[in-house]
Length: 395
View 1 (cartoon, helix red, strand yellow):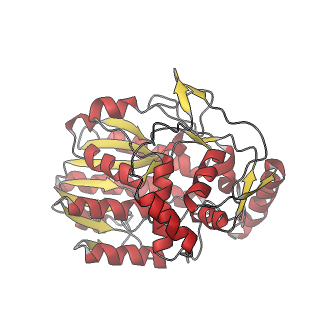
View 2: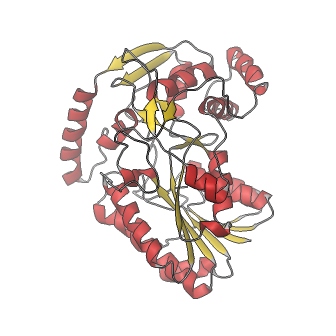
């Protein structure tokens, strides 16, 4: 397969491209080179024999150049965590560029485009597991622009095979957005905003890459929409406890009420937006602690035979090893002992330690409202450090 990956210098896209190349596919990547992390990923791609092209998908001639002779496209590039930019910017990058890319694909005779969407199109879960049929209710410009892009993709389905994958929170080696959780755990500190009972169903990047490569080729995926999420929902508390266990520390738990931070975020957004200043705290930074998402993924299982298999606990151990091995965390003797233990435990589901379960689509969990713990530093989850200009990256 001759494959184009957009957003290929991002966390997901770079690993997707390398795995596709390892499987023998002819891979071309486009992605931004705006910071050190993106440049490092581009260097690894080039070392793997993958050509990386930097440019704007909003330029039709560039889009046509990219898709020339490609069989399939996985479109991950997006304006995602950008703040301090206009709503028009999100629609230009996420919607208009997607339409330009689709038009180029049709013109070039590309067989299929897989669009990497987001669970953000749902807003949040409300009392029951989310499925592909759950009504969309995006509550920020990112989610609204991605929902609009989905509509554009569907409008082309009579001219090109299309597939939409709504991607859950993704973590694993090379992810920098959860790094602060690990850094805080290493310091023995865990700060929780709110009560810690909100739900996540994160998917390990290796599972996600496997699913995307399956979906872009599977005949049953044409004209379909899928949710790709992890094997089971976990609370925020369970996530931070799993991080502490992987690091091998006993974290001191500190709890911060949600309301004062939410008020501060609203005020900061209101002051900074008219001045085109990046707010140090905003509501999307608090989403990690306040929104709940959990899913039923039976459609992907039924049509594609795809099921995420890496438990959050096993995946966190995998991520921790990468952080330490690459210098993001100090490699102490305690860490070495933890690595030795983790190396003996396979990267696979652990059925003996259920974190949360679903019964008939409803959540069943033993989490108790108490002083829980995770980390707050205003850059805890959505790290935008050193981004020189408001741009994208997904993937």
